[in-house]
Image (cartoon, rainbow, N blue to C red; front, side, top):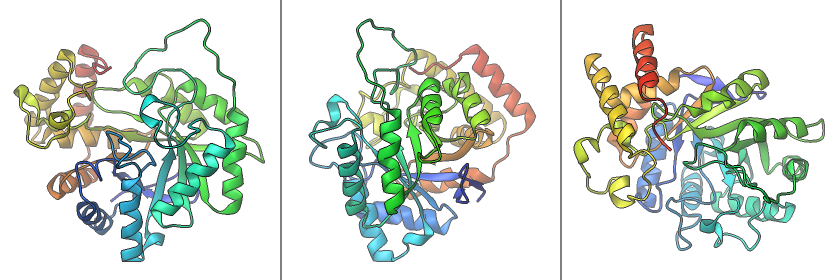
Length: 345
C-alpha cells in the first residue's frame, strides 16, 4: 500500500480509503466489521463516513454507518490505527430528519459533532468535512452553475471556521476538509483561514473516468494551495466495474436497488464505458482495475475512496494500489476522454 501525507499535516493516509456509505442499507453491521478488518489488514488506514450515512438516506437508519464503526472500535480497541474522516450534513430535502437546524450555524456544528463522536464511540475525528455547500450552487450530479436572480445567502465562511476551530481546541477534531465544493467556495474558505482559523486540508469531490470536471478548476486550486483531493465515486456507482454493461441488472447491485441514482447511466456514459472496457481488455486488465488505477495515478489525489458490498470487490479495489498505468495507456485514456468528455451529469 502506498501512503500520502494529508496536506499541511504529519498524518499519513493510505492511497486507498475505505468508503462506508452502504453500511446500514446494503451491508449489515457484521459485514461492515468484516470490511474494516480486511481493509486494515491490507494496509488501508483511512476510513471515510458521515452523519448522513447510509445512502440512500432515511430517518430510520440515519447514523447507523457511524454506529457500526463505533461498535467495531469498541470491539477491536484499535482506534489509534485508523485515520477517521466524517462529515456534517447540510441543508437539503433529504436531511430534514437529522436536526431541526440543518444550516452550518455554530449550534448545528456543535450538535453534529457531538452526535458524530457519540455514534463513533471515539474522542476525536481526524478529518471533519463540510458535506456540501450551504449556499445554492452546483453539486450532486449538476455540472453547471445556474445563475438565479434573487438568490439570497449570507456568507458565513469565517463563522463556520470559527465554530470548527473551537472543536479543534477541545480536541474533538484535528483537521478540516470540504466536500462537493466548487473552486470559488474552496478559495473563499482558504481566504477565510487565519492564525486563529483552520485551513482546509482536503476536498472530497467526485472524480472518475466518467467525470473529470474536477480538473477544470479545482485541480489547480489543489495544486497551488496544497489541498488534497479525496476522490469519491471512482467507479461511478459501480458503472465502471462493467457489471451493468449490456443492460444487466445484477441482483442486490446499487443501481438495481436504487435506479434513481442515474447520473452515470446516460447513453454517452454507456458509450464511454464500452470504450474503456475495450482498452482495459486490450491491456490485460479488468475495467475496475483501469478505472481505479487511473484515479490513483492523478497527482492531485491524496486518497481514492472506494466502496464495496463484498470482500471480493474490496480485495480487487485495494489491490489496484499496486497497478501502474503506462504512458501509452494514459494517452489512450485521454484520447477516449476527448471523444466523450465528462459524460456524467
